[in-house]
Image 1 (cartoon, rainbow, N blue to C red):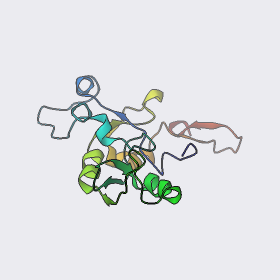
Image 2: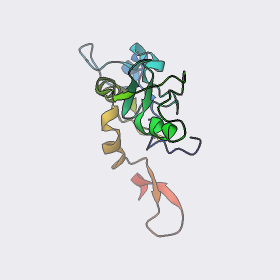
Image 3: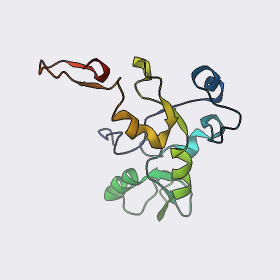
Image 4: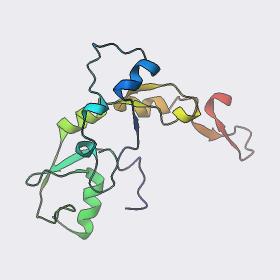
Length: 151
């Protein structure tokens, strides 16, 4: 799995913690979005890629969770086995966990470059299509990469 692409497997995201909310956004106490601090990190992490679950599935007997693609690739070499405890497993789509994860508040992956966007994880891909802090090839075909906002 060392060569896995995060956009195909787990999410690599920066959550907004409760104590940061007052500094970075105008959320209220009525904000019903579940906060990342209230969630056990192990409960939302793929046991294979160790990133936040993408298209989570859960093992029926042992309860371990995986990204759908991660367990699919694992089963190519180890059919029907759990990578955590090596028991025989069957998995099912964990729709509730997916909904929970997609509702978590995150920062834009480009926040280190100055982007102040923050929203639910489910909105990440839509934002990245227009984020001014995404690196794009220069329109002059000079081979350089610049921030979208500077194009």
